[in-house]
Length: 204
Image (cartoon, rainbow, N blue to C red; front, top):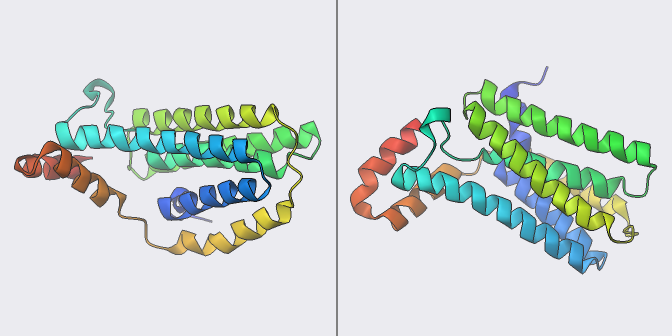
């Protein structure tokens, strides 16, 4: 049986961001410029929100102590942002029942990633659920924009082949995102706050 630690790696930065880039490239190759633009914009917005909340806590201690919130869960956000649109695009030419089943599977996968962060103690309930909800909001905004346009006719086998080629990235060590957040927090808050930042990083 796959462990939670192995499962949660499916939402690591070093796998999900190349996967998101693959979808953007595929849309661009299909000349779906508007969809590619909205995909990059919405994904970038989600990543920015997650990073901003984490930097705000690490740099200045800004959070919501009553619900133990120190920043949106990046894993939960990325899973919920990327999985439903990817499934939607892959099944766009299928019957409505198949598309619905695919979306429910993608949402279930996102919820499972959210649960994995709780089981592993990586996030509080508020952080994991808020990350999940943020990701779902972003993904369904993108899906809505796609639903207003004609079905993409570009070869989906290229998207599947790219997904398979990216799978080995799951076995890599996680990207040092916490170190990046610490460096940005020090740069913004000032080096005189380094000790406080390091202490908050330990408790994050």
